[in-house]
View 1: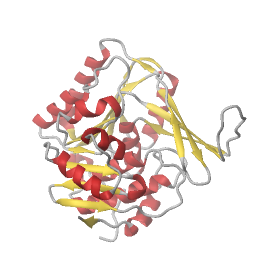
View 2: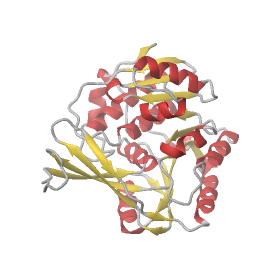
View 3: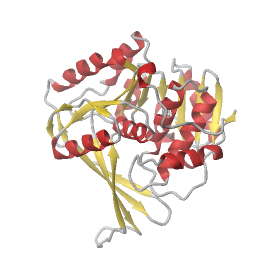
View 4: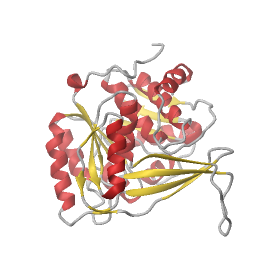
Length: 324
């Protein structure tokens, strides 16, 4: 194939892509020359992007012309802005509204090389009954879903394995699942055996109890995680690209050299590309190639999860997938 039509999608044929983001957010990206405490730092630019892993993936898919349904918790004026951004991209939203305020994350990006750090804060304040209410809401949406994506952290008060029953229910219904979480939420939900997991190197290291930094280490780690009953393990390695252990083989996707503007959201874009291509019937090598192009396109823009379809199409021929 010489490219993919990112706008031609048949939602009725394959059902909805359902993304679940209990801890929604917006990102404010500040572009600076440098940062030091005790000094006044003048930003050279500011951009707004989507935050919260599942919502970012829905936003990416919307920009590429693929419909999805985004659910989770939302709150306050920030939540209204987040929802409006998703809807403007063609995403169907079905959030449950709770107390507090949808978070604002602050991403500080160095102009010279794209290096960055992120400051997050708590925002949403679900009531004690809200976790069960959201679970019931998602379960009601599941029968119409083609894929379930569970993404991101959980607000205070939610059990760390909150995603696990949803993954089990989706499996009972024959619906593939993608899990993308970190920190204390990682192991309890991976134990539910989602279809696809997409840890970065630090998260894979945590799961395996040993360093995962090189392509060789990631390859061995991905195969080990796959033996735990996970159909596809995709480990992202930043400047080393990504490694995937699938039922069609073990693959490495080298990075495409580009001038990085903002790395935030590239992993979520990778998730979106994988889902998009697999639902279109692509083999794993092709899906990884397309996902690599989508993720690289996310690096070129200032807003987290911002994608230009023409960038994806231009990058696609430059992405290679190597069998290991």
